[in-house]
Image 1 (cartoon, rainbow, N blue to C red):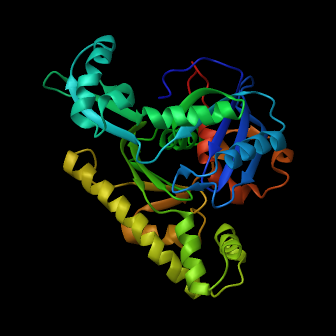
Image 2 (cartoon, helix red, strand yellow):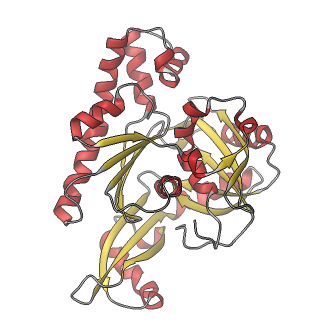
Image 3 (cartoon, rainbow, N blue to C red):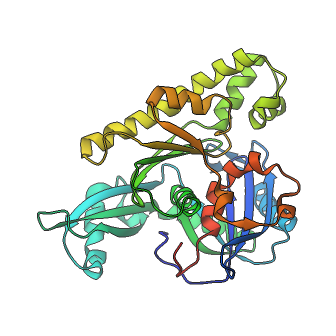
Length: 355
């Protein structure tokens, strides 16, 4: 599940299954820089996936196949990701020991830190710091419900695909941002990925995700509030959310919708910071990076910048890779780039390589 267990390959196909959109992307690793060779995305009907739960399996499988077909991807081995409340990422302290011994002890440690039955989870870990004093080391623990991992893998197999890696979506976002920025940063960075139903918050430093949190708010909340505020249907509200700067609606009323939803995101950031202060990991965030479908909503960056007095920027994972403009001929790359944080981060995975 974690990126440390990988095998080297010359190309990686990423499949990002969101509540609203399925995205697939292929990266060739044989050159000096990774290069996107294929890309497509397909919209999902609202009833296909609701609050992260697949309601119409056949509809999702059809969308996966359509996406791969549009992208002209023939590879059947894919890298994908899971997230949400069924995934726990936590930094813990353990007695100093070799990694092989830690692998034996991690089950007992997980029982103390993970709110799931130990028999129902898949575990992975990485030693972050080998010596933090008092004969202890710092370990990043990742636990996911087996039914979540198995269910996701079964979905891919039903689409006639072979799951190579099932990663954590927050780690994929981290991977794409660090690659685009030349590696881990000494700054405390908050990666905020705003999806359809969930906004993931990952606060990291020096390549270590000190804290992750999933907020039950996303672009679907924007859609719902726009429907209420302007009395429009679902399709029109989605169009406003997708391209708010081009929408024919009152800007002030649209801004009020933004504030209502942005407050929840802001509160999630503040709670994450409070945890970090309590644990002694960080007093503040140096930079916030927005990605996902809701990240381009006008005024959101300014709202978070003013509220938290921090630099806020838009993620552009496409700067991490080369690509032929023809690959994105159907799209405006400035508009879709933030949506690709997960898929680019996944496709940058070279099993056994540096990413």
